[in-house]
Image 1: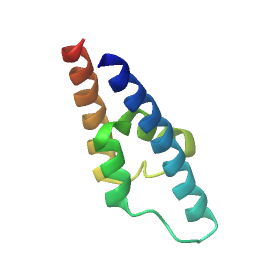
Image 2: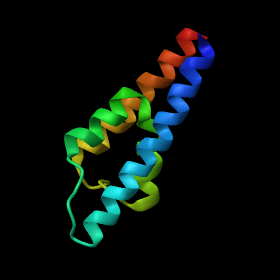
Image 3: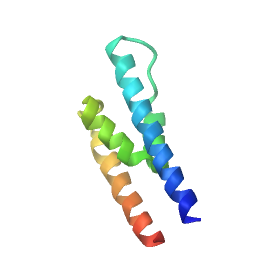
Image 4: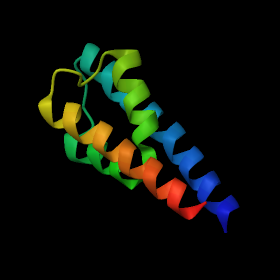
Length: 86
């Protein structure tokens, strides 16, 4: 069971990082964007580390208060959940 959780979290964080990077690319070239609710949902679902790395790596959504608060909160909760399940 633990193996499934680790694979899920790993893959979701890679997907999260990619989607945040894609959204930043779309912002730069003025194309269709990923909605903020989707970005937050991916982070809340387990992709918070990927989201945070992408936020600061791509300098994307770093000035939005919702992301400044929610992403670190999600990451903290995910770390606590992983510690509890170990």
